[in-house]
Image (cartoon, rainbow, N blue to C red):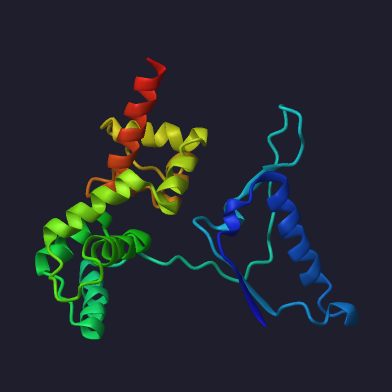
Length: 235
């Protein structure tokens, strides 16, 4: 049996530690007859590598000791974003199944908005085909339709967008993203934990000069709107 735990990294602090400890106990005792049904393989799916989740071993502020909460992982795999060509291949699978055509310019706009982020690639197509064109497969999906789909995603703030906004509550994410959105020149550094964390989450990417930039065109739009609303409400 293989079990997939999706969004495992949504657990934080004590619940996450308890969850991982239960898995480790089952793993360590898997040869016992009572634990013979313990799964032989598990996959913890999320935005970050569980092995990078560190906890402070002592509660006093003077403690600097950090330990990994989980050290029995065999391997960690990162699923990359779609390339522009792969977005075209994906959308043309829909064309092959339904006859509905995506203009080449529509694929370019989907790439512009998403830069291949899997949820955004699929959400843009779903919003265009299902919500805007009402599953009328005789209508061509144009660049304008994709732009309208992106605007709808920004306004509606579906699960993925809300998860992004929740990340802003983490101080280290807010420090990086506020600077990136404001246009600050932040040189990416593998030794900066905040930078590496935001890169691992897919919130930012590195440009050709190794400076941090938003990972796609939608993220800075939604973040700037939220920051603007927060400023307006506080004023």
